Image (cartoon, rainbow, N blue to C red; front, side, top):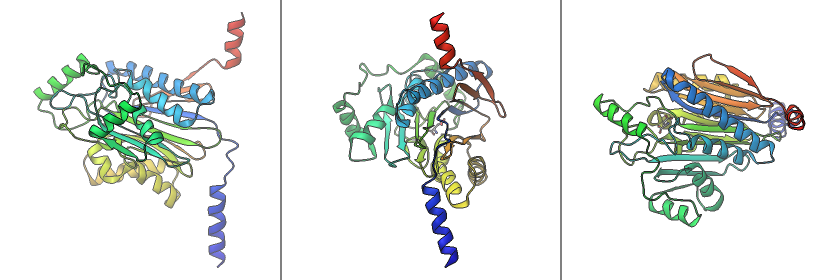
Length: 338
Ligand code: ASP
């Protein structure tokens, strides 16, 4: 009886943690994979910018959902990443993109897959969450929904295809490459606000040379994206055909929830378990309910960045943690008034 009482009290405490000390953060990734040295500066720049824009949205009274959506939109517009403009091509030379977004407060979610000729699949996923009765739309119905929501469908088609993506597919075919993630470049974001609200979002062009119609983990809640204010928010990148089999995002959250693991332990154990059992590697960015950050990958590299207060931290290689101090508001005011 005593045990039951203690358990109930603990549960009660856990659901009523006062989040007075939570420092807002926007944490992004720009994909797990093997990134050549000449491509690294573009990843640094793009992911730092995305974290900054997301953080700015949060500081200007935007919600965590607004922050992750905007951060992802920045990287969808940047051809240094495999999402939106500059997405990788499928075997037939077309772009098919997947995206999902989740609100940790309401556990509402929006998912889309096989998206063509839409620059910001993440905003389409957000509309599915906000405006449709469902979580996941695909195919003709998804296109009609996008149209009815005033989301631009680019015409003529193919405008998101870059020369770099065309060259990459050619090289991939010449090398008879198998379905691996190569450089990666999927994008994702997780944010927490001062009240402990968490959201997560992920967007991708998938894997190069994929069969038309293939859908990866990015579109799937519990695999590529997950958020629950009572535990954590997570965005995943890597070998999606493996990630979805172990529901990687949910595996990490449940390790934290049921085993009491901290975010980094849960992430590294889940990644190890996945790669030991199956082929394929992955990376994650995560924020727990107290605002602790998790950045983990067992791929060779993963680009990531976050802003907390006026510090921007970022990295690509294992163990790399670079930091820049941004001028705070007061300093900016002084400069403006000089
Ligand atoms: N997870 C993505 C997919 O399999 C690819 C990536 O993250 O690089 O579609």
